[in-house]
Amino acid sequence: QVQLQESGPGLVKPSQTLSLICTVSGGSITSGAYYWSWIRQHPGKGLEWIGYIHYSGNTNYNPSLKSRVIISVDTSKNLFSLDLSSVTAADTAVYYCARDRQDSVTVTWGQGTLVTVSS
Amino acid sequence: QSVLTQPPSVSGAPGQRVILSCTGSSSNLGTGYDVQWYQQLPGTAPKLLIFANNNRPSGVPDRFSGSRSGTSASLAIAGLQAEDEADYYCQSYDSSLTRVFGGGTKLTVL
Image 1 (tube, helix red, strand yellow):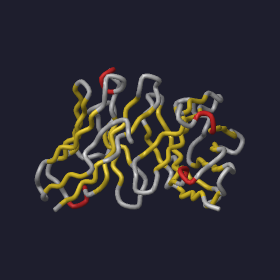
Image 2 (cartoon, rainbow over the protein chains, first blue to last red; image 1 turned 180 degrees about the vertical axis):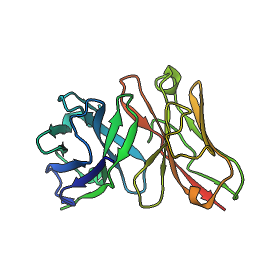
Image 3 (cartoon, one colour; image 1 turned 90 degrees about the horizontal axis):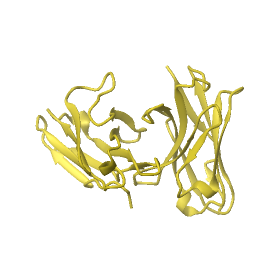
Image 4 (tube, rainbow over the protein chains, first blue to last red; image 1 turned 120 degrees about the horizontal axis):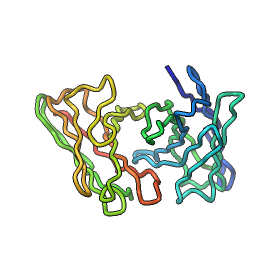
């Protein structure tokens, strides 16, 4: 059974880059049948899709975040990562990594990690 | 503000049937894109409940059902149980194939 685990700093200073890693276990990230996503949830709020990557390197980002987001994949380590630049307090959220089927349905979620942007 | 509109809260007594609504527009649900529903229990990650409008993943009880018509979708929960108390989110796509979510509905079992 595939499991996902987010890791990274819980506190990031304004204007810096938020960097998170999602480690995939129980399956290979090179399975062409899946895409690998990042989704966030602001405290007490709804969900916001950030973007996804396929192991081939194909990406798709939310237009509202596209100028600040990079999602990359490391097939040798079976992980993918998120970089969000120029963060502000509005980027404070729980960040989830997730696995999507080819029909874009999210079928597996990580447990989530809270990232706070504050000086 | 979320692209898809959901009522902030819905409540029902055990055993009752409740319906959660999700309203979009001509640029998302009205275009014919599929709708998914996710259940988020307190303090946990969301879980897929319904995909492609009315399909249940393995393990989801048949008390949960989904439907979609025009620019709206709905999730029905029959035989309400205490364990159903959670936040429920609808999700679809917009014209640029960006995934969009509703703001979520908090279901309270009285």
